[in-house]
Length: 386
Image 1 (tube, rainbow, N blue to C red):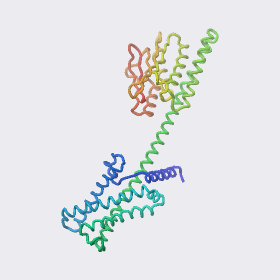
Image 2 (tube, helix red, strand yellow):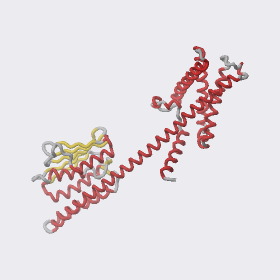
Image 3 (cartoon, helix red, strand yellow):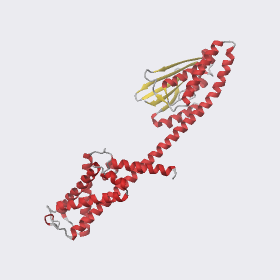
Image 4 (cartoon, rainbow, N blue to C red):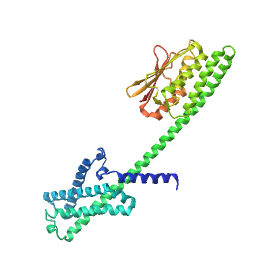
């Protein structure tokens, strides 16, 4: 047996077990009636509507087969009888479910289910004809002997009701299985997409670290003789960055506090290299340090601000990272006072990948915006659902 077939069989078994434990009204085959949650009050109303539909159908069939208009009295009789039969079926199915009989029957297989779903309508139809025999002339005197016409009517009514209910429950089971399989496939697809996003993140990290690693080590080497203290500080900051970066690549999510620690270590290393040309601050609103977000979300943004904004500028500038709540969202801003972006820019490969990650992980619930900073530079805002 292939894994796919095994998974489908498990899904079918699980859905059947859930259906045995749950409730489903036949009227729910019509999408309009699925909008209200299940309750015993709702089911009683639904059964009344279902009974009236059956009563109308049998009344029309009677008119077609007899070739005459049965009249209003016959219509009333059909409606009353259909409700007596329908509520009897409702009662017997409910008792079977409460007593656990329905669950036992479902586990016994198709034959047991066929007998169960056929017997209840037959008993209910016989009960309905018997009750009505005391009040209208059905050819049964005082609930006594049944003639051939009545027996034929009972058999026909039982057959129609049994086939209808069997078809409804069979359709419902098939639909529930199909929905469960679709949900499982969507879950599998989402897991594959998340794994692909994580692989892309690690590939991006592998691209970022080598050039940053070599540049930093080259700077440390150059500082050892003229300024050992600065070389030590740069190396310590670099170790902090590597530790935080390594933790990020091994996790599917991180916290805003951990991400700000990584960004702080990254900027500390660059501050040693750029000196007074780089100033930075990180301002996280109280209570947001534990906010969960994808790892390495801000590092490409900050790196872009340095590479395209501050490094080309002779006197450098400042990078400010801010995070605050905005209603049901958390807004994270990275502002710089560098050269600024052209109005048509998209921010390069790093920011394009970042947009794709946000779209994959959050859909339309997250946003990414680039605009001009005031009085100079660039402001990038990321909004995530809280």
